[in-house]
Amino acid sequence: MSNIIEQKQQVVDEIAAKLKDSKSTVVVDYRGLNVAQVTELRKQLREAGVEYKVYKNTLVRRATAETGYTGLDEHLVGPTAIAFGAEDVIAPAKVINEFAKKNEALEIKTGVIEGEVATAAEVKALAELPSRDGLLSMLANVLQAPVRQFALATKAVAEQKEEQGA
Image (cartoon, rainbow, N blue to C red; front, side, top):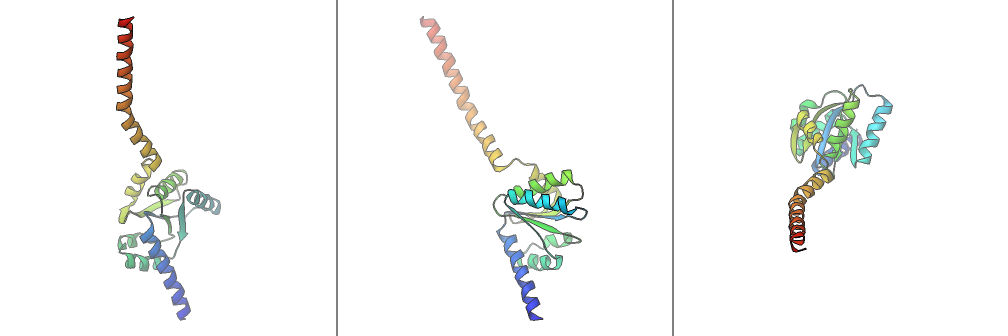
């Protein structure tokens, strides 16, 4: 009997560690997805560096009590899967949101974004943000624009002086 309890405690510790270590976590209801759809979702998440697991709700509740994320407990009803994003904050939300648009059976319940419990709407808003690379590209373009304008103005002045001198 104690062996079963020890196994459950190990699972609770695993969930708690993943909740603490992940930059963002998304909790979903996967009821209504067939095996092929779940397999495709897992594949997309794995390619994005996101871990996707199904745990018993009671074990997740125990883990949330240990980590202080008790705000998730009210959403732990019915079939629940959790996507843990350890590297990229946006990746779990983005992949799941895109998949949910194509497969209405997948429902985002809640999430944890950088240590704060988030609503489904907040998770969807996070998913709409560009990726880190996209944001860096936008920043580079914004920083580069004034330099480009200065270079064009300098070139125009030089050409104008050349014409006047010739």
